[in-house]
Amino acid sequence: MSGFLNVRKPAGLTSHRCVGVMRRVLDTRQVGHGGTLDPMATGVLMLAVGRATRFLQYLTTGKEYRGAIRLGITTDSDDITGDVRTQLPAPWISEEMVNMTLQRFIGEIDQVPPRVSAIKKNGVRLYKLARAKKDFDVKPRRVCIKKIDVQSFTQGDFPEVGGTYIRSIARECGEALIVPPEYLDSTCKLRNSVGDFCVGGTLTELERTRSGAFAIADSLDFDEIRSMLERGESPLQPIENMLQHLPSAELPLQTAQYWLNGGTVTIPAEDIEFVDHNYYKLTSGEPIRIYSSSTMLGIAQVDPQPQYKEVFLRKRLFI
Image (cartoon, rainbow, N blue to C red):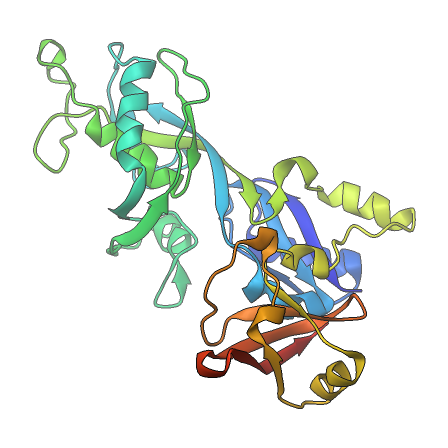
C-alpha cells in the first residue's frame, strides 16, 4: 500500500498523533506527514504512506489558511487558548480599516513567528515551550504572503483571513490598528513597537485549506477513511498523480532498463517536457519524472551539460 492521503485533521490532536492513528488504521508503520499542524489547527494534513514517504520532498509546498482574528484582545500565545494579556473595546474599527491594514503584509516580509507554532527551537516545538510557560526568543523569518482577503467582518467580533503564519498576522494587525485620540483612556495598555497605543489581536480559529495539490474540499476525516477501507476502496492518491508539476522525460525500453539497473543515462535536453510548455533552464540536482512506455518509473536528478545540449540523469528514486 503506497500513496498520498489527504487527511482532515481535527482540533486537539498533534500531527504526530494523526500519523499514529493512520498507522493503526492502515496497518503499516510507513506513514509520514508533509507539513506539521499544531494541535489547535484543523484542516488539510498531507500524509504519505509506504513508498510515497520517499517522495514527500518533491511535492509542491504552497499552503493556504483561513483564520478568525479577534481584535481588541491579546494573549501570551497569540491565540485564544492562551492567557489574556490585554482587552480593549474597539467600536471604531471597520472592515475597510482591517482590509487596508492586512494589505501591508502582502509580499516578502520579515515576520516574527508566533510563540505557538510547529517551528522547532533546540529540537522542541515552540507550541510545547509556550504551553509550558518557558521563556524563549523567536527570531524573525523571511516569509512570502501572496494574498490576504477579508472574507467576512462582524462589528465587535472578528474577521476571517487567508494567508500564512496567521497568529503573527493576528498579532501584527492588532498592533497596526492605532487607538484614536478620542478613545484614549485608562483601559488602553498595549503599545506597539513605535510606542503608539494599539488595539491588539489574537487568533480564535485556524484551518489549513490547502497544502500543495491537496484541498480541504477533498480531504477525508478518520471515519471516512475507515469506511472506505471497509468497502474495499483505497483512500490513497497514487504517487504519480502528486508529481505532475515536475518536468518529464520518456526513455526507450532498453535505456530505461539500463537506468533502472543503476546506469547513468544521457538524454538530449530537448527530450525533456515541461508542464504546460513553461520551459525554463534546469539546474543541477533538479528532479524530473522518468517514463518508459508511458509508465512512470521514478524520479531522476538532472545534471545539465549545456555545451553538449544534453542532460545526465543521476540520482534515482523508483516508484
